[in-house]
Image (cartoon, rainbow, N blue to C red; front, top):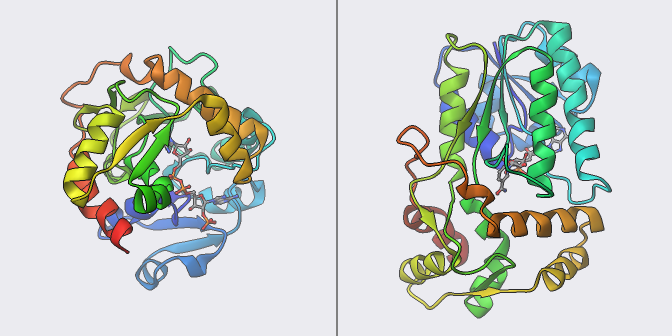
Length: 292
Ligand SMILES: NC(=O)c1ccc[n+]([C@@H]2O[C@H](COP(=O)([O-])OP(=O)(O)OC[C@H]3O[C@@H](n4cnc5c(N)ncnc54)[C@H](OP(=O)(O)O)[C@@H]3O)[C@@H](O)[C@H]2O)c1
């Protein structure tokens, strides 16, 4: 039995697609099962509820060999580490209670070098807590997601612009969530691994925001420009959109850490290179979203 949390999220949804055709018994935890497709609802067992509820995760993890989880972002959180630990503690208690053998979790690149890196630093507290249980664990370590560009669909459409406090020249790895889902699926379907390890997922190439603007211009057949914005102005926009002061500060701290090279510390290897290029992602995901 494998258990998949966040089955309606970007990674969880694609992960489910990858494992539905397998022979494995699959259980998901969903707050609102009507958000799952009919195909998924027919194939999997569903535990309804929130993954920060100990009763829910105890029920969901009973008889499970392997569990996939990530901590959903919460832009309304008053404390980033508080949100992450409140979320992960019940799941750690449940893996002990139910004797789960393996956990696959989504963390981040940058472990070992992160200092004051906002949400990136906080997510490593999840890794520490999971590892302290002694469960066999694979911590998936991606850089920023290509999908983050979808947050800027409005200015891309209306002004041909996207923004960030990170410099236009800083080249960093970037990966598509489909590639994270593929790595997670392989681990969920493989009963042979044990021990605790990190799995970096680097995407196929390092790109700067200016490189991304060039690729987006070519794919969308119109000029797209990157504009760097001061951290304080960026943070003010985020809080105006409803984020707490703490969550917005975390995003700004993350951007500073990225500009200082947090994603460049761990070298790319053939194993960590994932297939989806930014150009292909723009063709298959960004372009339909912009045109839609
Ligand atoms: N964005 C990046 O660049 C980046 C980089 C590295 C790592 N990460 C990590 O990636 C993760 C985000 O993954 P994602 O993009 O796949 O997430 P996502 O698309 O935002 O999905 C979040 C999921 O969590 C579910 N959810 C929210 N609150 C819940 C609750 N209380 N109980 C149960 N389910 C709940 C939502 O389902 P419903 O709303 O349907 O209930 C949804 O399925 C984060 O942990 C982040 O730290 C992100």
